[in-house]
Image 1 (cartoon, helix red, strand yellow):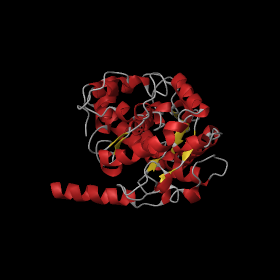
Image 2: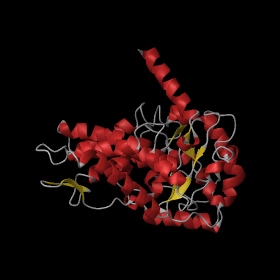
Image 3: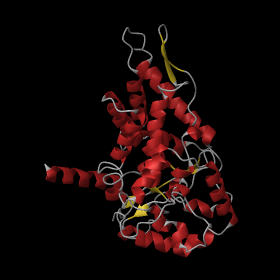
Image 4: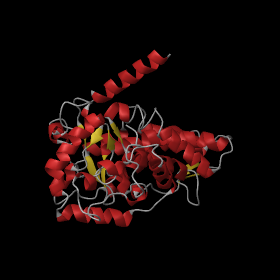
Length: 351
């Protein structure tokens, strides 16, 4: 059984590292800094795409059946919608649509996703040995790698599923949120197949986008103004449009909310940061971006939970590999996420 699991994980990681450009694994979000003019905010266009996906899903799979005496439960519909957008690794309706839209400002261009890999922070003969870089877009004045949109729907759906199971067992809302986060830190997600094993990095931005994807699932059915409501005559109806600006935060940006890399990855990433981005980080347009991010930040249940795990050494401390630390900037200059501002447990973080 153990051998089968290891073989499955190896095959999955191999497929991930050799997939088509549309399924790129990681975005280099420092890279956008080279464009001093930045990227145009494409939130409206991306909202248009996601709401078109919701309308298509409801028309094809839900509204036809929704007038029956026992309508499908809203939570099941929410989970099915998240899966509809990202059904499996080789199909992502949102990212593919973003890639094809000429009116969405993206960096790098589609034609350069493979060519520009050797210029990225991931360059060099490291695992994964060769892959296309994901594109960057601007959503609500936050730079987002399109790989995070993958996570938003795919891992977000899995978080949502864990949350719902926990609630059915009688756990409170916060207890269920913690169960979802624990799953997100498991060998099946960030500590294994979708993190350390496949990319050699523990990504806090992945966790953020995963969590927010679960939040979209919750918002579809819960709260004072859910996205879906049931009418006895018309069945399930969409009550309002999804706005991705409600879910995208500066913590989606892996330059600001940096990852923690395995040594064999970090050696290469650190070299690029030192050679290129320590200098660019001092430029006015990057400092403005950082100030804007700090103004947007708000602590939440999951940030408090993660901070506690960093403090006790259960997950790696991202500040050890931050731009601020790497470039030896003075105190208060280009510091990253303030939520992680607790004593560094040197030597106790995970390797």
